[in-house]
Length: 263
Image (cartoon, rainbow, N blue to C red; front, side, top):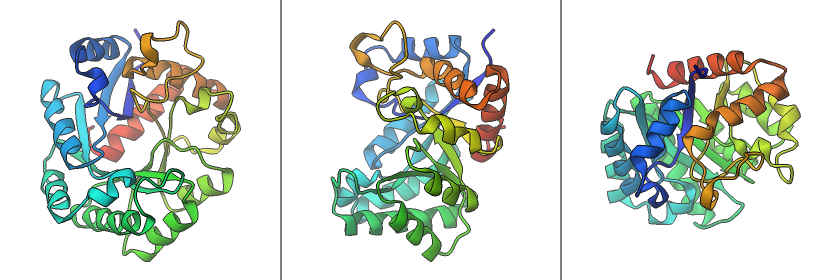
């Protein structure tokens, strides 16, 4: 029996899962993935993620939000839909939201304004934040500190440096680690940083269908990542931390259930 794990971030509403969603879920369950938080990246995607939860409401939950890439298109109507959806009991976090100054697919002013609206929604609902930050830590932290918290949640798919990680930890956030840690080109710094994440603040995720672990063998057809690969990521993290897979899986699953209120 595989040690139960919890995937706190995956894009199950992606078109890349459209033709075999049932099989994808069954493979994940067979691999011991006991829970999944499905990411909403804009109003339509948040609705789609929530609808997928009806397949397995005891194992699937979702988020409601707008990724910074889509901030320029997050008008009042879109945010009203995100707000309405946030009241659904199956929706357990606000986001994906934050700042992405790496690609700047939306103007930075739009990103910041939409991020502040999400912080307000999290404050109003009391739900945790599902956060995205890339190459924007200084501004991200300034906005969080300016807004009237306190806030709680997870900085998902963390790829930053040591100082940034500790800044998030000092503010009480959880840190989400993906298969980026398996990437010998970009993720080697995470192999030492992950040791410093307190056991009660660490979360694991696939970000499927993206960020397929490069150490996975055999390589999946089409390069698509799946939630069934979460134990592979967990094993890599456990090795870096000098823990057993069982210890790592137990702690991160408990953390996810506690943070998102699905105990």
